Length: 88
Image (spheres, rainbow, N blue to C red):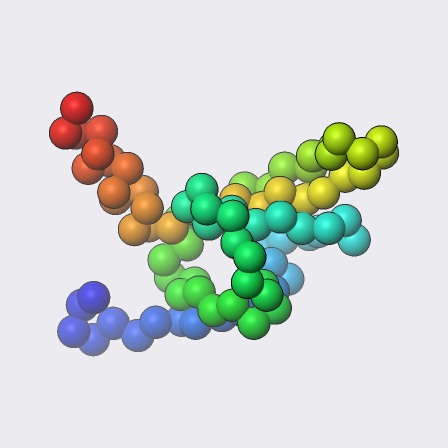
């Protein structure tokens, strides 16, 4: 981090309310392609490091059951992905 960097910590719940218009469907969260199992109402992230948020509606194998799949990509993840691409 830069010497004078000030993180902007926010819960995922606050982040979603601020940036997304979600319905009442259940939520599945992926952060950098890893499934999140913690309580998203308490889990903190640095809002400055969020690169992209992608929301998809998925139908499960149960009839007529839909969930919101929220993919969060962080700046750190994107940097690693570019670096990995350059090594091959």
